[in-house]
Each structure stands twice: as structure tokens, then as C-alpha cells.
Image (tube, rainbow, N blue to C red):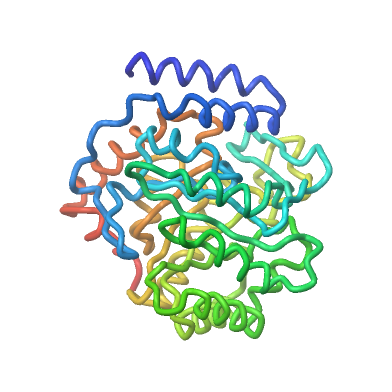
Length: 352
């Protein structure tokens, strides 16, 4: 472990003594102000390179939405060695989110429950920061609708129009459990209208559009979503968001808190949904696997289940930035063990 990695792990341990949301704000502030000065990672092994969505990702590992809500810390997070950062969720108008407390650590379970409610500074603030982007690094933007909006599809159009030109790809988040009624946009008719609006907004451009879905979907819902997405002309899906389910295995005293559960307990259900989506869409869409990734082996399982890219967030809350090179190193070992020449060769290996 390098001195920098050691220092970061010590900082993570100290920050974790703070209340969860306070710790999050402190971490974002530190990465926003000082992360850019990190020396940056070593060049990735070429076997980790993934070329999808018209982009060359140096490795498949990215940061999931929810950490860098207001596009403040993406430069610093990329310095940790991530292949991409997904900022947001951003809504057209600023909003405070749900009442506090609204974030809970479940250390016994390696999990977090949050009911943040899309707290963010709005698209104007995000656009101003993204407009200052310089240098390398792939940054996606995750867009959503305001809680009090009377036309949520119009909100996504506003977010896309303002932010898509400033990001490398766009993710439409219709799966957060913390905005009442938002998951209704996963229904067939609503989703058809939403995706048609985004494709129309894209016009003849090539900006990749992805849809982020929930893990709490039955077979019929997955059938409908896959059919709508394939017909829409968008480029991929992010699978999955947090879950409203509460596994009986949870040990924490906060297990009954409302909100979305992320972390280790999400690994199995999210990977199962990922494989089910891959079976339905074949090789026609790019899939991003999210939920419960804590090791290189877990990332590898997502890839074999159909993900070209994999995202983490909760695991970094408990393990810090030094987790990133560890996952990449272990992922290479998994590829070598199973005889794959690259990440791309392993995508969907477990899906018939």
C-alpha cells in the first residue's frame, strides 16, 4: 500500500466517525477542493479497456450516481483510477430532498439505507460546473424529475437539453424509491413516452442515452421494459438502483428504515436482474452492472452476467478509495484464471 493509499484509508476511517450525511458532505468537499491534486493512478492494463457507447473506457469500473450529486467532485474521483464517474441525480430545479435524518449506515451488513430524495442544486449549477471540464476522463450525468413536478417527462427533457451536451453519456433515473410515484415511469406506456422524448431531444446526435431501472421488478415488468427500450433506440441500461426489499439476513438496528438499500445485500438480486435483462436484450444494448460490488470477484460476476461496465459506491463508504486499484487487480486475476483475454471477452459468459 502506498503512503497516499494509507493516508486515504486513515481519512476514511476518521470521516466514518461522523454521521452518515455529514461524512458524505465532508468527503465530497475534500474531493472537490483537493482531489484534483492527487497524483492519479498508474496506466491501466490494456485487458481492462472497454470500448462501448462510442467511448474508450480505460477500465470497466465507475462511480455510481448519488455521490457526486452536483458535479463537484468528478475530477478528484477520476484520479482514484475509476474508468468513469456518473454524477447526479440532477433535477431541473434545486430541491432540498427529504427531511433528515435520511441516510443510515448498516456496517454489520455492509450496507446503506438512504431516502435522500434527489437533493441537489439543479441543472443550472450542474451545467456551470460541467462546462468547466478539462482534460481526460469520462463523466456521465444522471437526470431526474423534481418531486413537485406536474410534468415529469418534461423535466427529463429539460435536464437532457441542458446537460447532455456537457457529458459523455446520459442516464435517465426512473428507479429511485425516494421520490413518490417516480418508479411509475417504468410502466410500459409512461416509459415509451419518456424514451421517445429523450430520443427526440437527442435528434441526429450520437449522445448515448441509458435507462436506470430498479431491482424490484417482476418478470412481466422486465419483459415490458426490455421491449420498450429495444424499440426506443436508446443505447443501454443501468441495472440496478437501490432496493425497497429488506432481506431477512439484515442484522443492523436500522434495517427497518424506509428508503433504498444498497451494498452487499443488493449483490444477488441486482445481478439476477442484470442477467435477466441480458437474456432479453442480447447484445443489442450496453448494460452497466450496479449493486453490491465490493471485490474484483463481484465485479467479474457482474461482467459475466452481462455488464460491460460496473459501478460502485457503497463499498467505498466502508473501504475508501484504495478499493479501486484492489478491484481492478483482482478482476485481472479472474480473467487470467478463466482464460479470458480481456473484460470484453467475458461479458455475458454466464448468460445463455
